[in-house]
Structure formats: C-alpha cells, structure tokens
Image (cartoon, rainbow, N blue to C red; front, side, top):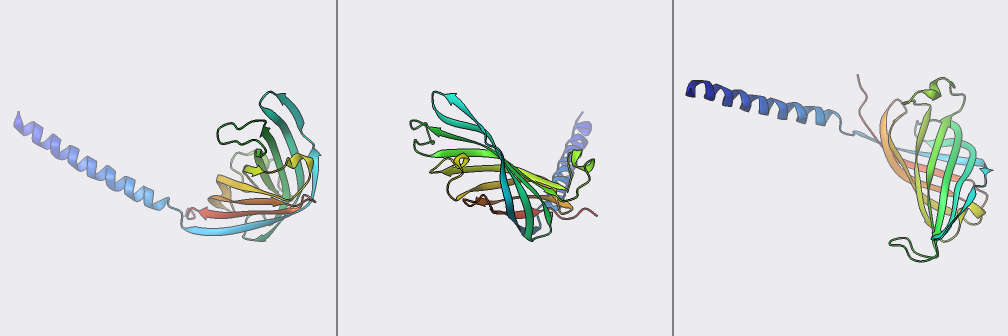
Length: 194
C-alpha cells in the first residue's frame, strides 16, 4: 500500500512545480513592456445632441449630450487622424449624496476616436485597430451641457488594440469654451506577438 502512495505524492509535487513554472512564464510574457503617449488635438467640435433633461427628485440630470469633431494626433502612432465623439450624462445632486456633493456636476460617459477613411466593414469587428474607445469621468463646478467654461476630466482606455498591439491607458480630456481641446493618454503596451 505504501509503494503506491509515495509515487502519487511525487507525481503531485512534480505537477505542482510544473504548473507554477508555467504560470510564472506565461505571466512574464504578458507583462507590459512599452510606454507610449498619444495626444489628439480636437478641433471643429460641435454639439450633435444637446442631451435630454431627466426629472428626478435627487437632482438635475442631463442624458445623452453628444459632441463630434476632428482628431489629429500630436504624438504617438495610434490613429494619426480621425474623428472624435464624446457622449456624456451629467448629474448635480440637490443635497449631498455620499461622495457626491451639492453644487457640483458629476459627468460620466464614453469617447471614441475613429480612424479617417477606415473600412466601414472593419469597424464592425470587435477588436479593431481603426477605433479606440474608452470612458470619461469628471467633477465640475458647472453643467458642461450648457457649453460654458473650460473643463477637464479623466479619460480611460481599457484593454484594446491600438497601433497594432494590445494597450491600455489613462489620461485627460480637456475642452475649452469653444469645445476644442485635447485628449491625452499615457499607454502601456503588451509586447508584440511574433
């Protein structure tokens, strides 16, 4: 009986060591190796949807405020020229609600940069390097859907194909009173697959 138990313990130990080495090796290959920055200059930005005010008891809420314009990269090699789109909701509570304080506007939404002259059929695919899209959040002292003032918020790019390899990043989206500005991202890139 003991002769059968000892080999099973050895097999289990060897298997455990092998799996640990495999996980460590695979994990090392997937680490981010390169950092890159990209800044898109946003111009000719226009309001394409002024949004819809929603009546709620907790505060003022505007849904679906949408901007579109042109985007041209100042640096980096992610979509050198394309089209910018931002869709946001903004909310201002009448009274303090946890971390949301009365007198402030809380803005959430999504942004996209689509490559100029991108193949429309390719844009329908899920992981397409011809489009980068992410999220936007901000806390402002005024309602940005009224078009007054300069505003800045956090832009996030979740894991996506950008410039030919997988990247993720964070940065800022800044717009002036004329709705023109910059989208800046600091990217971390996975190594190229060979």
